[in-house]
Length: 396
Image (cartoon, rainbow, N blue to C red; front, side, top):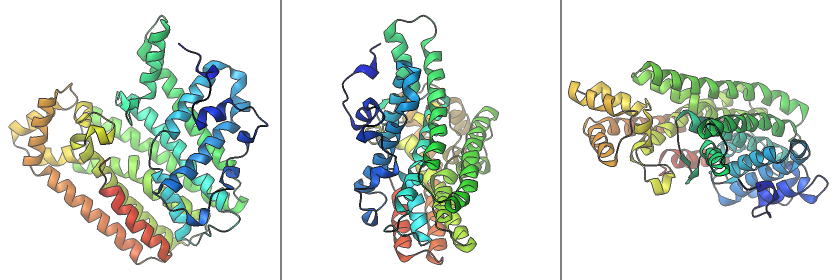
């Protein structure tokens, strides 16, 4: 296995990791935003994505002093995490957190704006933890067109010719890398430069969000193991595994930083829950019908993984015994393309796809209605309308 820590830097992240403490690259994460026009930042745009990635790259540079004494093995693991974090992604969660702050009156021209965006960017490290661990749980081999972290380290084990189980090694390393991402998310929040009062408002929401995403993951695992096929169980998983930490709590976090009142927080949370569930329902459809060139994952992967989604629950609720047996025997098996096509046809013919599309539309409408009547700023209302449509009508 090549010693990746000794290669010439080929990316901003590798350059950051190669720079020692005391170099320009090792400044604080918030300092990375000194040249960014925060007033002009709009979530979902390349400029916003670039700003978040500047924060993350700078933050990784500040870890050098901690990481280097542990040696090249840990440096390799940190580099893999950094590449995973900065490679692709729409920065959806920081975008909603930033919008929640703006919606509650946050001033992007104010002295605390850089600290707020830095804290919002920490959500990408929570997301990295969730994705790395989720890929192990789901036995996924690719993510955004690249090998998943556990497969990457399994391949490294094989290439090095080491004894033992390469797959077990890959999973073990990936678990630790995911744990590191979650720990560093906390570090980034606490080093963002928030005022003590803002941090005190932020911390309880952050704690709830972390608990909810882990609880949602456990509900998902338990639902698959126990075979709970109800629509209600699938929606509960969507609520806590995805909606809470993708939209609802990021909006809540941003609003808390701005000192929002309870009525506005409630409206943002309704929007976040409804649009967040609609976001996951769209993801469920893409997991079965999505174009792998666009999604970066094999077509029909959710069927092979046996995910108990609302789509599957709605199909089983409508199915006759023969159709139900076909769905149940196919889920969680190594389906070939023809078998995937057969299941797609069954799901469509049963009306499950249309029902999921109906739910997406209904939830999006109720979420937007909550925001329309709230005290959120006009700019935030406009942003949230556009972001809801982007989240629920996407192709990847």
